[in-house]
Image 1 (tube, rainbow, N blue to C red):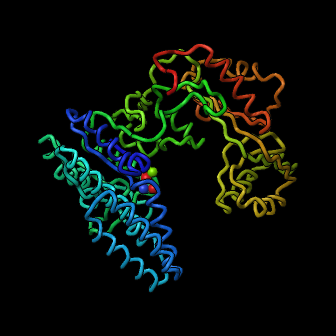
Image 2: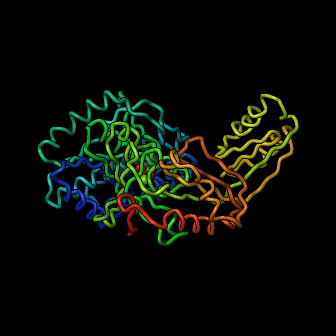
Image 3: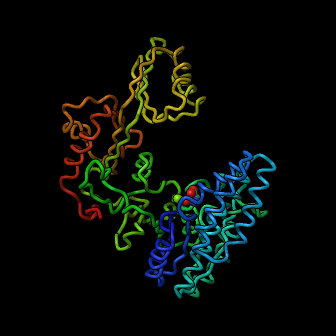
Length: 444
Ligand code: ASP
Ligand code: MG
């Protein structure tokens, strides 16, 4: 059971989460917690300020963090003495290396896990705190470390199995680990989901529950379609296609270690613990609806590069993509004709520099304010006529680009941003006019 930052943000949230654990005691829960909401950002900000010489501001942040944590646990003083010393040292050194960033950030999960274990005990449950830095052993790629599976498995088994067998709840901080020589590391931002998947996979959990603040995955953004359904079950591949759309749900890749072992992953709402959430599985089970979800992303820019040099030539695409590589900008959709290439970007941070580098390759046309609409569903693999059906409900909407086939569970196209809401509403009304009750249910 993994509880994210909002599920442990204050005393009320922690109590609620502890009672969710209580309800599952017979199933021998292993609890992984994130830092309390906002703590990781605060810690990294304090470290950056200290390294820039703004030690006063850094200490103010430490002060506020200590206050929040001290309300939740009595014995936090020692941790904060060490954190302050660390911040002072950063001020003296004047740099904030990835290795030190991990050390500073680790205080969030160290504290939240101590707090959660303490709260379980005070509520009268048998609980034990396990230090992630003793069990989750990683390489030394600071800021994005990967677990070393065999040592981690042995350590986790030793640290947790006897307690679990004795009916004790094990509580561990997510996101953090240590190298085999004991240097603190982190798995990357949002890494607590990854920690939960690693624990679940190594200890062969029955299932993994990611407790967050949304009901699960939806058939589309409920701000666009208030009657959107909750998706009860989705395959890992489908969830991965949707990840790009920034739904405030987990990034599926982080739970891959569990999915590979065929351990189902649930997304659940800690504010509505009776909900059934969304279940992510390795294989999609049969669904009577053609698609599972319609995602939309606004603020897309379409670039079209046209050049007669492209005719019958090779190496053009290579030169083109090198430009995006150089500016570290990812391209999301591509369509080519004999004399032109259209592609989409969702980040404009290097647009001017990119345009400058593209000009020698051909004429560049820019369409800003576009939206990407994406239909995702395993059944698209087997069903002909999806394009006709999708575009059938959009006879008056101009389609700027289309993509289908790369992963054949995704049908995507680009429209003008001003048409996006109407398009999604019509598509949703058509594709989810009737729903398979095994797979969808009303939200809330
Ligand atoms: N606390 C870490 C972060 O904010 C890890 C997590 O929340 O999963 O990135
Ligand atoms: Mg988080």
